[in-house]
Image (cartoon, rainbow, N blue to C red; front, side, top):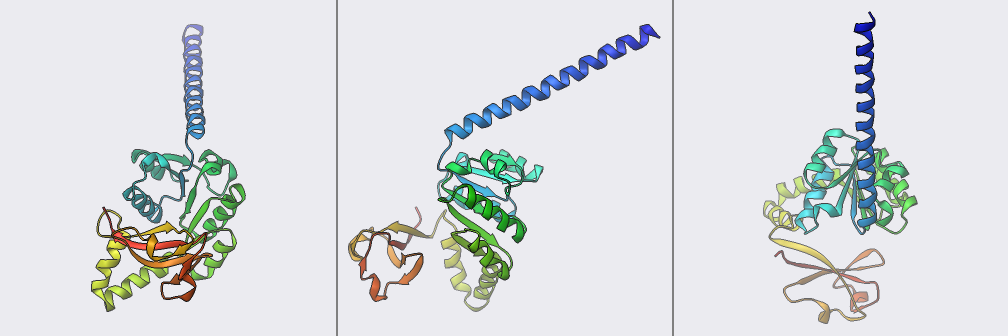
Length: 249
């Protein structure tokens, strides 16, 4: 009995100790890598929710020239996190409504955040948490139900996208003006065709501030869109922004 059981106990102890050391080593390595990354990365974009909407947003960000390392993905799904990692993004597994998880994603040093989970109540909670941690970053949130959109705005979202209404408008446009859908697709796809861009304005006349090859569409003042025929935009002010249309390069 001694000859059989004692070696088995020793082998079991070796396996337990070896496994524990390996796990602790991996965790320490991940912790140090994350710590080095948080010190290095700044001015990035945090995407909370990497489902269909989040993935589409990230794809468009990449089309507009952002590097994969400039986008941090936060999600609770292991498969989604694995996908984001394969695409070259820093991926944090966890609940984005928790401050500790957002801290891992470097939300304090981020320039923007996109909130696109599968539920509106989760989106509201994430929006509130992000705004509490970083009051200054630009926060865009996606909502599915019309009745919840005002909660996202009250929670601190700078821009709220009604995803359901957007799809409905596209379907209606495709029915009533199918040719216009191709133009809209060009606007939404940054890889080629037409593209909208927002430019800072200087005090003075509008005409001399439009780059060659661009067509002015509107002026944004105090967060509101104003048409070019509006008398108040004849002279631009500090803080105004010009929305222009141009051919994507």
